[in-house]
Length: 185
Image 1 (cartoon, helix red, strand yellow):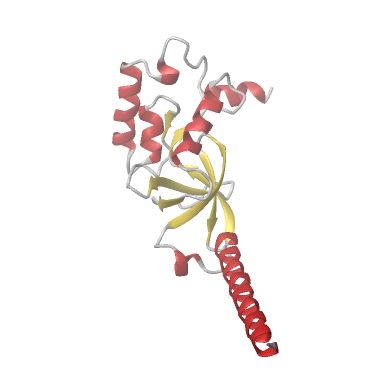
Image 2 (cartoon, helix red, strand yellow):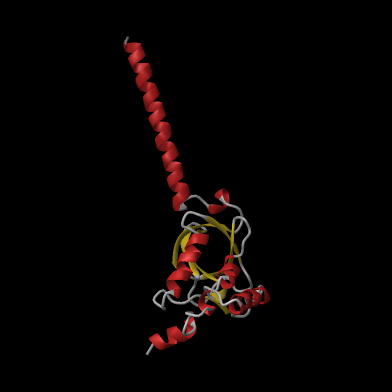
C-alpha cells in the first residue's frame, strides 16, 4: 500500500512540476525575456498598448518600445471626440496581445526615439491606410518616409469625398497639428 501511495504522490509531483515549467515558459514568452526572433517572424511584434490613435506600444528586440505610425496624424485624445475614436479604432485593429508586422521606411526612428513604421495586421491589412480611409486621422507626410504617400493620399481623399469621420458634418474643427500648437500657449 505504501508503494502505491508513493507512486501516486510522485505522479502528482511530476504533473505539478510540468505545469510550473509550462507556466514559466509562457511567462517568459509573454514578457519578452526570450528573443523575439525565436518566437516571431522577422518584423513581427506583440502589441502591449495603444496610447493614442497613431502610436502603439510593442515588444521589440526584448524591450517595450513606442511605434509612431508613418504617414498619419491622429487627433489628440482630448481633441473633441475624434482623438478617442481614433484610439479606439487602432485598439480594435491592434489589441494588446496581438501580433502585427512592422514595415520600416528610410528613417527607422524619429527625433523622440520612437520607431517609425507602417503597421500591418497578420492578414496583411495596412493599419495606417485603414485609419485614413475611415476618416479617423489625417495625412501627415514627413520625408524621407514617403513609400505609401500616394496610397495614403487616395485613402484620405476617399474619406473627404464621402464625408466620413472627421470629414463629416460634425467633423474635426482644427487639425491635430493646429490643436497641439494652440495648447502650447
